[in-house]
Image (cartoon, protein in one colour):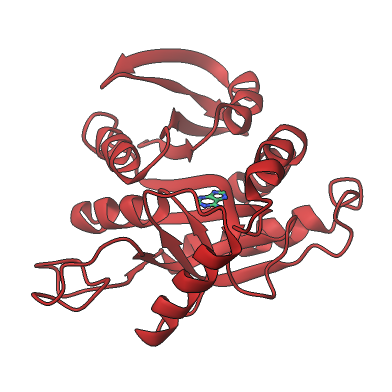
Length: 246
Ligand code: ADE
């Protein structure tokens, strides 16, 4: 049976998962450690993408070519871009755009040259399962205690090689995307790269992001505190429900 890939951006999100693996083994490849084993009765391979689009695409490629994964799910954190997306919320990616890709005037801003596409979509079945898993996880009041009003959203995620940490910068990004016809819920640094790689290889994928900050002047304080205290608990709870569901 081909394994399911679980890709995490941060060590904090992955470490709880490694401890849950049965028949665990590791393979070092492409400057990364890949953990193989069984998680809730399913064959999985865990990998750390590291940070940024190139690192994420390289990792996704290794998972596909070396480990022959059947599908891929990415867990991580993101900055809230839409006014309704707050710290502690969960965003499941429906589609992905690279907000720092601009080959204009040769191609429209944000379009991926030679693909004739700007948006890359997540797999619908995996995405519905991630939505349900996230809603069920947030229904657990203990998990939600630090953020009692936390919501689950589904929509566009914008990825780029920048940590957005200023209100002016996130305003400008929101406006630029909006002018081009896109309303992004959240910003992060890997999702669209995984999306493009999976598109090239015909591998179904889905992404879930917990909102660690508002991509504003406080992002650099909120991000590490959230990752340490909350992100790993969210990732574990959502993934347990997701794996048992698919
Ligand atoms: N991931 C989490 N917060 C982010 C931010 N503000 N910018 C980019 N990636 C992020």
